[in-house]
Image (cartoon, rainbow, N blue to C red; front, side):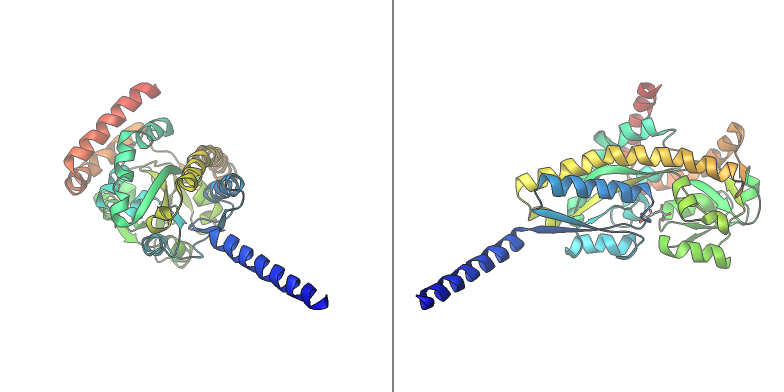
Length: 338
Ligand code: KDG
């Protein structure tokens, strides 16, 4: 009797072990890396994505969220997607242009006048056309999230007009269009990864940088920068990227869960980003953390004029047809957004 019992227990233990392994192997893990900090709306959006995916897959897919560049800078994380060692990252379009040059189209200075126009163009045919280019780079793009309108800060002087930019050492993202634009305005651009930026400002390696209000506030750039200009010179989209090797390994149902979650979290993330942008712009101005200047419409127009040759030069790199299509989409969106 005893012998039968121990055989039964052994058989049961083995059975549970096999089930355990089977379940584990069936369970899929999404390691997701971003550069921004846990208090930034990008991370809030990623946690919303995590909640939706784990709930709708009944835990068959789990999401591990890594922030603050813990898994490397944008280039490293995108390479991780290509090799399949990382499953999700959400960079700005600017560093993506190093993989697919057409992505610079969304970084053309002054392309979008407000979020309404940006949403319509990014979520429309032009945005989809860019996403369709990603599989050739072993990545899949699911949705556009929002980094926001970029503002200039510096430690040298108030910047109200082009003349104030002369000789200013400005950190830019690693993107030749950004660098050419600041050069055309008379500044000296220094490309640098996001994680090195605060130290570079603190040590005076660069005089200034440009980022949206939430980043400026949450990264505490006001501690090392004296001047803030509401330049709105470029609107930065984020792109929700998935590793293609990982994506191809998902069932159709799992792909739908992941894509729907990225799309739903997009709306939440954009809303949170816009709330944060207003809140932090107000805080930066009211708390007097930096001397705030707002260029007049004439001064903004003067900046546009200075960067026009850069737009023409990079339109050739991006592709004239795609640029024309994008500006046509912007024009149509501006009418709808009126
Ligand atoms: O991971 C953060 C980056 O995607 C980066 O785009 C943030 O705007 C940014 C910058 O200036 O580097």
